[in-house]
Length: 260
Image 1: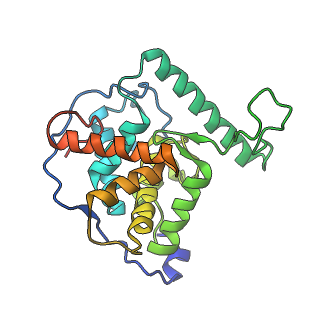
Image 2 (image 1 turned 90 degrees about the vertical axis):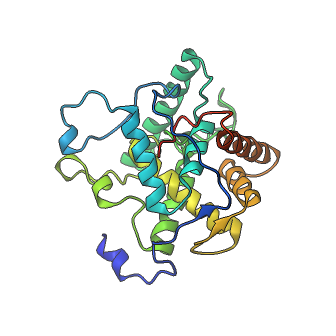
C-alpha cells in the first residue's frame, strides 16, 4: 500500500460490504460477450506477456474481484457494464463506439502527457457542439468521464485509505503502475474505477459513510440512476437498470458480465 495512505486517518476500514436486500440467485453467464467489440486496451502482467487473447470468462472474474475489493454488490457492477455496452448493438455500432471511446482516451492521455494541450471544451465557433468536452469525455469499458473517475479514486483514498486497485492489479509487467486515472487506458483498471464510483454513490445515496449494510430496491435504483447523472434521463437509466436486475433474478434476461 502507498505509505502516504498508511499515514492517513480514514473513517472507513476498507472491509465494508454492501449487499442488496432480498436479492434472488442470478444465473451465471459463461459465453462470449455480445458487446463491446472484442478488442481492448490492456497492459499485460508478466505471466500474460505472450498472450494474444484474454478469455471473456477471465474478464468476468475481474468484474467479480473488483466488486469484492470495493465491497459492492457484484450484480450491480454487471448491470452497469451491460447498460454501458448494449448487447443488442450492431457490429458497426460497436466499432463506432470503440473508435469514439478510443479517441477520447487518446486525447486524455495526450492531455496528461502534454500538460493540458487538449482543450477541455470546444470554442463556440467550432463545428463540434460548443462546450462539448473532449479529453474529459466518457470512455472505457465502463464509459466513465475522467473527472468522475478521479473523484471516485480520490474518495477511495480519502475515505477508505486504499488505492482504487490492489497492488496485484495496479502493478503490471516490469512494475508498470497502471493507476493512470484515465478511463479506457486499461479495461481491468476501468473495472476497479467503476466499482470505486459505485461504492462512492452507495455512500452518497444511503447517507451513510462507510456503508456496511443491505440496500433497498429503491436505493439500488437510485444508485443506478446517479451513475448516469441527474434529471429525467438518469431516472430512466436507473429504472432500466433496475428492470434488468429484476429480470435477471427471474430468469427473463441474461447478465452477460456476471459469473459467480
